[in-house]
Image 1 (cartoon, helix red, strand yellow):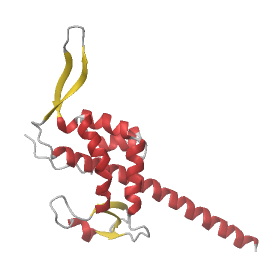
Image 2 (cartoon, rainbow, N blue to C red; image 1 turned 120 degrees about the vertical axis):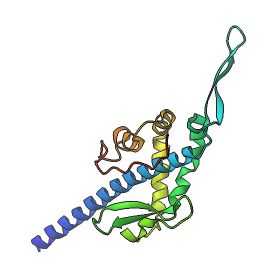
Image 3 (tube, rainbow, N blue to C red; image 1 turned 90 degrees about the horizontal axis):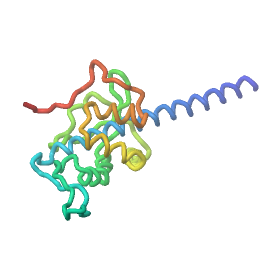
Image 4 (cartoon, rainbow, N blue to C red; image 1 turned 60 degrees about the vertical axis):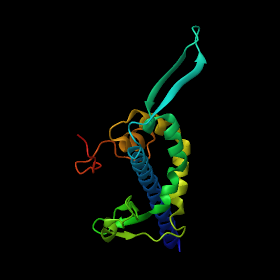
Length: 189
């Protein structure tokens, strides 16, 4: 009887700890997905579009201190983006890679409206809440760390997902890009 009590107690703690690890991993994946979504939204903005920022107060000579900055990374635009980015989480599902069993978040439909080509490489995780928790996690992260998001996106920091999700808000344990880090495909020159 005493032995079975220990087995049950061990099983209970194993389940609780495993669930906690999954929770942390999902929050990390949500953070990275939010960063990717924000970057996609920013890249769609016309780089020639500008917005005037600064004080509307007059100095002693009657002049206003204003300057024109690119709209894409302005606080005005980023704040608007932060208010709606979590709606994009409705397009994501939890999945595990068939080869490694590693948990991932997968966008079902790509930006151009096609089915995600990675669907054949993953198994969708059946979730009792129909993946509504992804949006919930997103809203919590964005609300709690909005200033961190605004500060880093305004500066256009390299590897912003690692800087933000790992270094600043500590949702992910990775601090440096892996050798197989997937850089976003950007047409630059």
